Length: 212
Image (cartoon, rainbow, N blue to C red; front, side):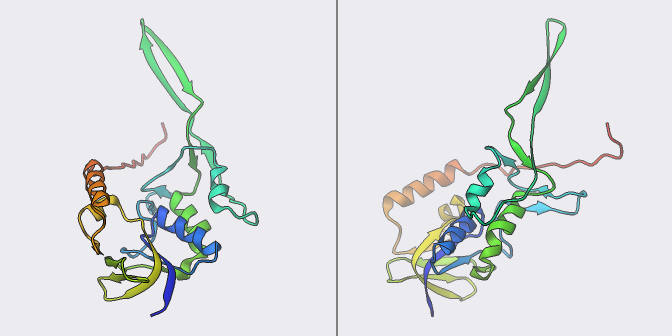
C-alpha cells in the first residue's frame, strides 16, 4: 500500500480546494468522496431551462475577483461572466408608493454555476487524485502513518488526514476514529452538530409560458 502525504475526506468545496492547493504545493494527495460525484452541496441542473441552475450555493458575496484569488495561478485567468444583483423594492407610506434600489447587492454567475467553477478551475487539475464511491468509516490516526478505511474494503495510508465532511456526519459517528478524538473536540462536534441540525431547505424554480 503506497503511502500518501495527505488524504482529504470529502470532495465538496472545502475538500477540493484543499486538495487543489496541496497538489500545486507538491504534496502527494488523495481525495475520498462518499457519493459518486464531486461538489457536496454545490450541484447544478441542466434540464429545467436553457441555462444551468445552481441547486446549492449561487451567490458571490464579494467582488468576482475572488475567483482569481481562489485559483491563485498567474497563468490562468478565470473567464466567466457575472452580474451584480441590484435589488429594487417598494413600500407604501402615507398613501404614497416609494421605490428604492439597493446598489450594494451580491453577484451571481451568468450561464454558469459554482459547481462549474469548482469542476473547471479546481477539480479538473486533480481529477486523477479523486476517488468517488468511497465511504470512509474508519480513521486510525494513532498509527504512523494514519490509516483510512472505506466501507468498500479499500484502505489507504497517509501522514496527514483532512476531514471535510458535514459536521452532522461526524456528530452521528459515521466515521470511527481510533483512538477516539479528544473529549473537548468530541464535545465541540456534538454541540456543533446540534446547532447545525436545521430543517431541510427547499429551492423552487418556476417556468412561465409568457413573460410578464
